[in-house]
Image 1 (spheres, rainbow, N blue to C red):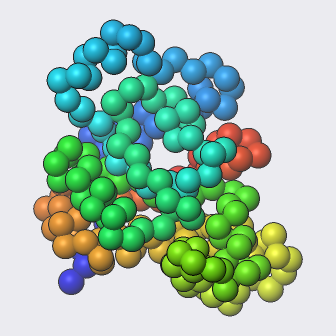
Image 2 (tube, rainbow, N blue to C red; image 1 turned 60 degrees about the vertical axis):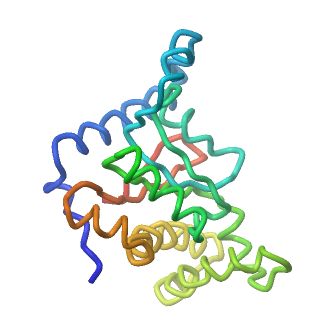
Image 3 (tube, helix red, strand yellow; image 1 turned 120 degrees about the vertical axis):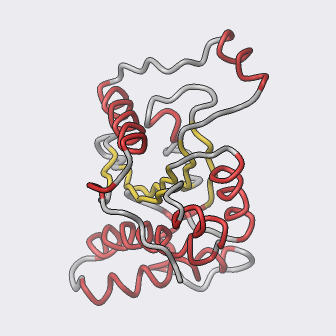
Length: 206
């Protein structure tokens, strides 16, 4: 049985602090005052190994670089990127590595506004080649949004972007016994967020 994520009030102090660090870094990014550590000294320190605080699944969109958005430096975020921030076996394996081997207590699924993959799944779900696999993963979010939104395309896509994030948060542990086990042991929390390209702000969905 899939373990349920704890509510925001039930999060451990450590995870709460990590989320606040991400929010604070995003605040600096929004006003253009980044202070992340990308120095040569930091690069040399990381030769011995990495100890990131958070694993992050996000879209491959070149306009959504997570380290910049959260003003994080070298070795602070373990990032897995796929179009539409969807998961396949390779992405799941990478997320398992982050959570189990690197012991990141937080897994953040980050979607973004104006997502081309979600828009394509709405406009042209029948795509060639391996693009079809991406569309198939996003299609359930489109269907869920269609039942709740009967307005403009832009409204439906905006809702579908959040639905897609929430769906990934739900299905990641359903597809991974390792991550499900870590959640059950209280060693991992999975949450979702959406990056608003228009403002630079990240909206946490819990």
